[in-house]
Length: 158
Image (cartoon, rainbow, N blue to C red; front, side):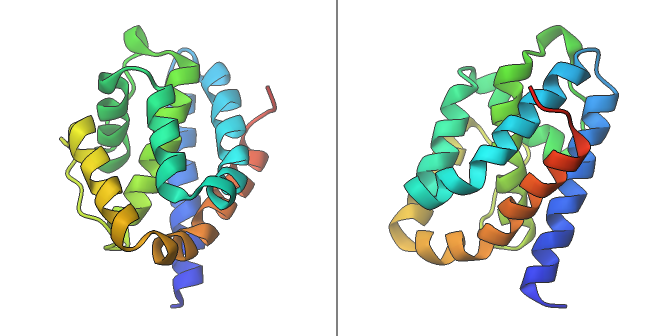
């Protein structure tokens, strides 16, 4: 199986995981629209600014470290979103970033634990930016393009 095919499958798997979250949360319709927007802008942001800067931007837009940490747990451990803390806009940024981080982990590019703090995540990203960002961006490009495609057919526009 080629790396490109792996990334297509991984993007579809993650999009379906996000869709499962959308269908099981009270604010799912709003979350779906936000996820679609965030996934659609992701490839061009990465090409313009780089993978690490874009992921750091997405994580910062979540504004709350707990939202980021919960999003990583959701993607890595298949946990549920807790409706009482759901803010669709903030969660969309964090979930898309967590999806990319999960893809990087599942392909063996980074090591990240489901209980990683925001500080741990930032340290990992900065380390990769200094040593391997161009190579990683080339590998992950197919993933983000296919995550965008999945978002476009799964969820309505804002």
